[in-house]
Length: 495
Image (tube, rainbow, N blue to C red; front, top):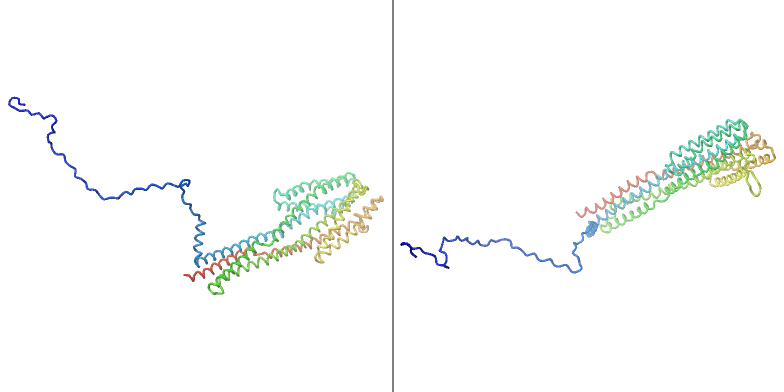
């Protein structure tokens, strides 16, 4: 179409666009080499009914067993195992021996220095209290003017009892039955002394109330104090027996380990001989010698100690117990004899359908106990030094019984002064006092002799175990070192 001499051209509908500048083309990038991704395989499904678990870890013990098993397949490994086992066995033997012998040595030391002296102190507490009671009644019978000798003896007995109670309290465990008995005796002793002083004061003035106070004091002594002292003695004697039970049994564990150790050492040396044709291995021989010394030492040493301790019990402790019982019976008999005259029939009992003086009945009972104990003490005495004083005491007891019957006849016939002279009179009256003093002195001499025998035998028993614990440990170390060195000698041949 043309306007005014020009021509305007319109694009045709539906025709392509006129060409423009060309679009730049990005050159193609060639493919680069790189890691090839590996496809992850799918996990296999777990079998039905079986949960997925990690494999169990092995214990250190199991790994150690495997290592030992592997080592045992070679001769050097077997030698190392044998050496370790021998050293351990010898050390165990020495340790058990040292432990058992230390325990028995300590028990023997307690027998000698602790439990037996305490048991003896407890018996002396009883004796001192009984003697004080007997002496107080003797002084009462003498009238208003109590002899100075009698008074001094009573005071000495009281001081002795108080001093021994202090010693016993220091060596008893707080809260123990022994401590309770000691506390009760410490409380009762001043009460008893007060009653005796009241009895003396009334007796000096001629008041009959003095006899009542004396009987009351005697009842406190007989029913409260002496039973408590006896319980203390039994407790301390029980401790002594317990120490004997600890000291005397054979150390079977140590002896058994010693036999096993010697057997193992013998087997190891025989094995060494069969493999090397060498008769001796110095280390093994040293270990065997050390173990043999310990085994013989513990066996022989304890056998000797046991024999001496048994002797100290049979000829010491048993005799001491019987003599203490005899002395206490004589003191009780003397006290009841005095109280028979003090009470003048105030205390009676029925016996065989007859009314008898209670104190005289008790006197006869205690004299029967004394007779039995003296017979037993004479049987236990193993030499003349021990049996002679017992025989003299038995003779004095027979005379005592005869004179007592004379005193009772005089009293029953109304001759009170004659009866009194037969009990506490002068030497010309042949009083029972002389017989009692003779029995008491002879029993004291027998106690000194038996105590000496106990200390000698118990000391020998204790000495037989001296050095055993330390010696056993030292020889065990030497034996273990010898076993290790002997095995090391064999191992050096494989290098």
